[in-house]
Amino acid sequence: MSSSPVISSRLRVRDWASIHADLTFIYEGEVAECFRDCAMPENFLGAWLILRGKCRLTQGATLIEAGAGQWIILRRAAGWQYFSPDARILSIRFEAEWPDRKPFFDLGLSACFPATRFPRLEEKGRRLLEGVRRVTPKTTVDLKAELVSLGEFLDIRTGFLAWFTELCATLEALDIHPSRTMLRDERIAKVLYNLSRLPLSARFREEELAASIGLQVGQFVRVFRREVGTTPKRFFDERRRDACRRLLANTDMPIKEIALELGYMRLSDFSAWFSAHEGTSPRDFRRRFRDTGKPMML
Image (cartoon, rainbow, N blue to C red; front, side):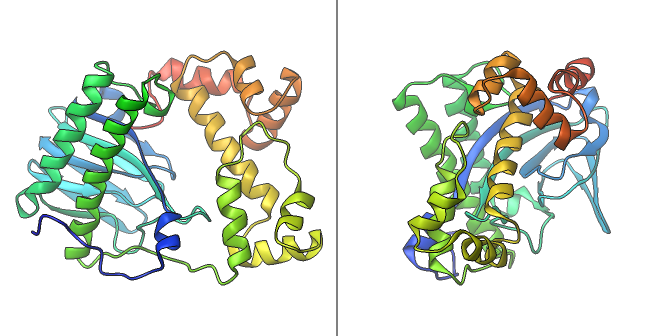
């Protein structure tokens, strides 16, 4: 493999620049008992290198069985995972999606292949692991919540992008290409860019978003739904719910602080919003993960 892998698909620079790709978790070690035979959430995206033991993964009609020395690159879909009691893995969890939240890779995954075929993928993965461990020696289930310096952040970011570049080249070699639902309307691409950077505590105003691209609110909502498949408000609300679930399950941040982080001044309003979407209170949602000792990722 060349030293500078290149993705064969060709898009404009601004389209590639709109990709959201980031590391959220990396771990090497034994598979905890709570992860050996369990469901996996539909928002899981990651890569497992099986170092010892066996793994069986089912996602719909897809069945993958892997042993030591094999990679599994997971599709972002619900499924069921089973690991043998002696299993040991290198696990890399990451985000990779377009501004409309469509997965960067989808068709062709989940995939399994021998690590010896693409040795640089493991090499870059271990360099990334070493870099993260220098910053946070204790394994963290939500890297984004860690306090780091700018230099440490840049080191982790550089390591992740080196591994992600290798992953892209590996999947290209396997004839698995970036999945892209091209946005036909450049105005919506601009709105999605702005929404992805809007603070979670910000008050959502469709009028301002519509005005920023010269549309009336009704027309803006119709065009946005046509391009993205949902309304602007629901799109932003789902981003907030994702962040909320992650903070509740993977951090010790007080619930009142999480509410403020999401723009709720009253805890009762926050609890009502969360319960309406999740069917349980924030406290009970957190207790569910605390009782099982099982974070939202592996």
